[in-house]
Each structure stands twice: as structure tokens, then as C-alpha cells.
Amino acid sequence: YAAKSQGGNRYGYFTPAMQEAAQTRLRLIADLRGALAADQFWVAYQPIVELATGAVYKAEALIRWQHPVRGLVSPAQFIPVAEETGMIVAIGDWIFREAARQVKRWRAMHHPAFQVSVNKSPAQFLSDDADHPEWFEYLQALGLPGESMVVEITEGLLLDGDAVIKGKLLALRGTGMQVSIDDFGTGYSSLSYLKKFDIDYLKIDQSFVRNLAPNSSDMALCEAIIVMAHKLGMKVIAEGVETEAQRDLLAAAGCDYGQGYLFAKPVEAEAFEQWLLGRAGG
Ligand code: C2E
Ligand code: CA
Ligand code: CA
Ligand code: CA
Image (cartoon, rainbow, N blue to C red; front, side):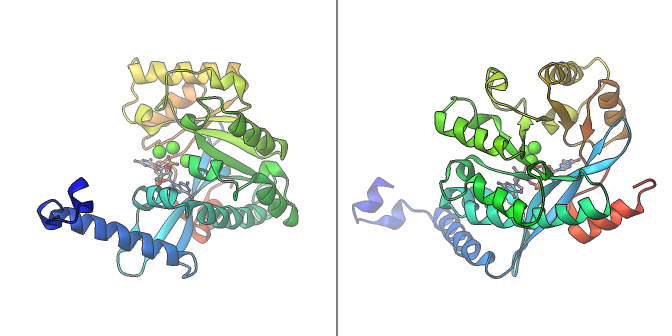
């Protein structure tokens, strides 16, 4: 890379494969810039099921990008790029408003306490353009209380106990919106942040659920997380529940909620609604 700026024989250092990767990335950035205006994003909803009863009154909103040429692009591919370029702020605002309108509908037709969670990456959380008052004002304009939305953040955001983050989190909680720790258990060894911040839900990462079996070390970890969370006044959501065996083990361990392909894959709002209506007892 240093040789490039010296002018010289740049192709000697910048291989065709590197050049192609760089071009693909630039094209992705350019396409992403136009995607919001071109209406290429849509929101998928995945139910979060209460394990003791099977009731569904929560869902997670997950973004989807329908690219005109490349087809469905995975968030794992474009979310990091959106974060690096700051585009995540506008995309995040858009998905929040979409999700809020769905919550309003699902509160009226399905369950009065229905909640939708949205993911908020550190880049979104730290940006001054994306403050919670605006999100809360949008909820108020729809006649919705703060607790109709949950914000999912990852552990890394809370680790250094930064005063700015603490202030933003307090402001968020002050609106009544709730907070969930996503991918819990994959981030850091120190748990001290759990007592410093007011957290509502822990989401056990799917890597602990995947190989869940009686007496396994993953089982011990899940049980310990559930006991700890309950003692600290938090509810637990297990991610990536794919089998009945996993669900039963989690339910027996006292896990509050489960999310995963066993119940439903993430689908667009209309299909989600049909799924809700089609279930016995709602
Ligand atoms: P995440 O927040 O941990 O979301 C859970 C991921 O697990 C989703 O992938 C979901 O489709 C997938 N999943 C759900 N059930 C199962 C299951 O039973 N088995 C397996 N193997 N996977 C399951 P998805 O939708 O591809 O999203 C990937 C990641 O992209 C998310 O991970 C999140 O970090 C990020 N993301 C998605 N939407 C947004 C968004 O609107 N904003 C931000 N900032 N990030 C988002
Ligand atoms: Ca999430
Ligand atoms: Ca997760
Ligand atoms: Ca994840």
C-alpha cells in the first residue's frame, strides 16, 4: 500500500484480486447510498416466543436488502459497510419507524403489550444524529408508549463505562423503551456492566444453544446465565432455537423466551401477521 502512494508501478503491488475486492466494495457503498431512496430495503420480523405458554407478543425486526441485480444481500455483508460509512444512522431510523408502525398495528389486532426490538450498532448509538428523543417523539406521534420498542445492543458498547454512552442509555430508558443485550456471552469476560446499567433482557447467543444437550457445558452456561439474569431482575431470550429438544431444555432451565427457526424464520410483515393469525390461540 505504501508503494502505491509513491506513484511507481502500482499494479506490481495492487493485485487484480485486491483491485476487484476494492471495486466490489466501492460498488456496494454506491449501491447502498441509493438503496434507501430506491425503496430496496424491507423489514423481516421473527417471533420471540414465551416458552412457558407458547404465547407470542414480541418480535425482532431484521433488515433485508433486495438488490436489483445481486438479489437478497445478507445484513452480515452490508451492515458493517453501513456502519463504517455512517449510513447505518439513516437506515436505522428508517427501520425504527417501519417497526413502530407495525407495533401499533399488532398492539391493536393481536396483543396490547406487543413489542418489537430493533438492533442498534455502536456506530448508531454513538452518533449524535440518532438520538432517542426523536425515536420517542415518533412513538408519541403514533400514540405508542416507550415500552412498545426494545433496543438490542451488544456488550462491547457498555464495557468501558463511558459517560456519554451511560447518558444515552439512561435517556433511552427514561423514555420507557427497553434494552436488550444481544449475543450475550460472546463479548467480554467482565460482567460488571450488568449492575451499572439498567438492562431488561439478555439474549443468549445462538452458539450456546446450537449444541445444547443435558449435562453439557453449554447447558451449564445457559442455566447459569438464566439464574444470574433472574436474580438481577432481567428476562432471558434464547436465540437460534432450532429443535424441540433445545426448546424443552431451555424451558426446563427457566428460560423466559425463545427465538429461532423452530418457531419461525424471519419473514415480511404480512407473512408474519398471517403466521400470528394462523396459530391456535394466537
Ligand atoms: P442478530 O441481531 O444476532 O440476529 C439474529 C440472526 O440470527 C438473524 O440473522 C436471524 O435471521 C438469525 N436466526 C434466527 N433464528 C435462527 C436459527 O434458528 N438458526 C440460525 N442459524 N440463525 C437464526 P440476519 O437477519 O441475517 O442478521 C444478521 C445480523 O445482522 C444480526 O444478528 C444483526 O447483528 C445484524 N442486523 C440485522 N438487521 C439489522 C438492523 O436493522 N440494524 C443493525 N444495526 N443490525 C442489523
Ligand atoms: Ca439482534
Ligand atoms: Ca443475536
Ligand atoms: Ca449475532
